[in-house]
Amino acid sequence: MHRFLRPFASLCLLALLIGLGLPARAFDTQATAAWVYDITTHTVLMDKNGEAPVPPASMSKLMTVNMLFEALKDGRVSMDTTFGVSAHAVSFTTQGGSTMYLQEGDRPTVKDLIQGMIVNSGNDACVVAAEGLAGTEAAFADQMTERGKAIGLEQSHFANASGWPDPQQRMSMKDLGILGDHIIETYPDLYPVFSQTEFNYKNRAPANANNRNPLLKLNIGADGLKTGHTDEAGYGMVGSVKQGDRRIIFAFTGMTSEKDRASEAERIATWAFRQFALKTVAKAGTHIADAEVFMGDAATVGLVPASDLRLLLPALAQGDISADVVYAGPIKAPVAKGTKLADLIIHITGLQDGHVDLVAEKDIGPAGFVSRLMTAANQLRSRYLGG
Image (cartoon, rainbow, N blue to C red; front, side):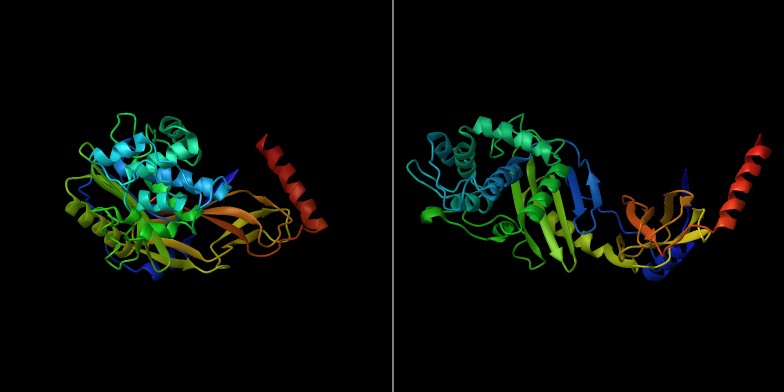
């Protein structure tokens, strides 16, 4: 059966380390949809309509970039591989959207296209990459949708490679955050291009050569990812900031101006780092609770975290934190030190529950012959009396 224990020693430790105070102040974002995630501790800090499928605008270019990164990782292309430029790709230069100013006859390299998509937000670069990898943009969009599902994007459907307005082009802010996290974690060698501030292909750009990420110039640890804007979507952004041991990622949309987008991005980053703190609440080996042992040379075994227990907590909160230990018991002896026996579940108001493995504090051997005999007799007595 499952046993539930309230680890009082752990709660006292939490109280000592966190201190007394007020809960973290909720962030009242002006975005129509937003999702903020602490990558370091896998903690959702904010979710406002985060799972609603909405027009992603150029933020969906992250999926096109991801597909090209996958092709690089698989060896299907190299940074020096060149792609042809179709009339369809060049048409985006004259349609008013973002462009890297490609022309028919150009042979941009994969390296050029990555910079053109990320720094210039080039719709033409996205189409060239799509056609170079899948033959047609439509076929590539189908592959994007399929691949998106495989990496956990549950509310994403792609009709094109660039985020050009289309009723079938939809992503949720949660999906965009998950995609950004996937890129950061899977391609650490390629991710730094997101912090590149300028790219001007063949010096053709009269404008639009600069990265539109408004946080890169603020010296707050921002290093990517992508902005987006259409009349339907408004102004949005997927961003990541690293400070100290922590990295956050956020996605939001629906702002009314480029200025408001920049302000909201900075406000979200400031809130995420100032209102939450990463704390070590228990060192490895700290006694958390005891679990009942059956037929052992001891009646209980101590439960301890195998490694330091670090949690992201509201910076000033204490009163709304509780914890439970859950294990299937009694635990049958023998028990080896370090064996996982239980889960420590931390409940923090306003955040998702934290789950930590607890292991045996020491070896527990089998009971001696007399003890086993007495245990068997007690079991028979209980059954008889119960009948």
